[in-house]
Image 1 (cartoon, rainbow, N blue to C red):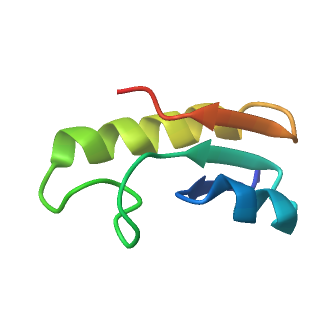
Image 2 (tube, rainbow, N blue to C red):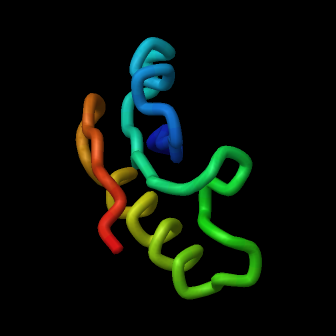
Amino acid sequence: MATSMITILPEVTEKTGVPRTLHVPFKLGRPCGEPFDFGTRKKVVNQLLEIAEKPAGSYLEYEN
């Protein structure tokens, strides 16, 4: 299983060595967006699944 991570602080996440990272532009404590914004949450999960298929070292910026 591929390891992927959602991050709000990519400079910190980079130091941990996570193989695949999705950088999101949301507030701390809300890595999938605002509460009850199911459309945004679905986009985050879909992009996270997309990066899980990529090779280690991959990094994506969240696309709205």
